[in-house]
Length: 230
Image (cartoon, rainbow, N blue to C red):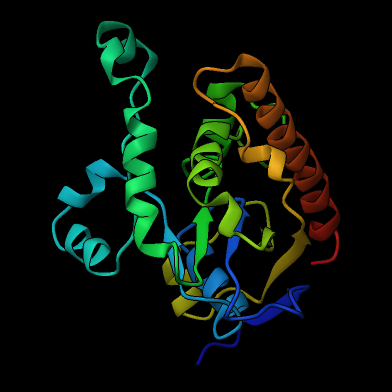
């Protein structure tokens, strides 16, 4: 019902009976409607991996639980140093959360930046990217370890808005966004990406991190290219 033009690029051969891993840049709450606009009725319904603490958020936590969103429990290095017996437990929790998806097509969404990208956050972490925060490889490594053999492809999504500031949700509802580009690159997943132990094998961890860094460097360049077209 709004005048926003949705410029969806790619994703022509997606199927609702396949399983996909979606990775996307993250700037605004508008990113979620953008994914729905791009994939509605083309892929299975989304499942977002969420931090376990979000289950306690009033109303939202109950909704996430009812929608069968998998909750992830991540332990910090400091915590594991004090409790070495918990090593690997976070992966076990993630795998258990994914068990219900083993026999069903699913689209799993993973925001590798972990939070919405803003200039302030970029400066705080010293991000080497022009339009992105540093990606966190641990979350996607857990997802691949839990669901890798079931996933048919990686959907590498780049969402671009006009201007230098990401719009808020009200801007979308009130028709203030002229055009939104959702660029979809369908990529094959290398089985080697889930063939090791991310927590205990430094060489395998470096391999996954290198793969993620390569994706992010390409995405940063792609955003610069797409912004020139708005």
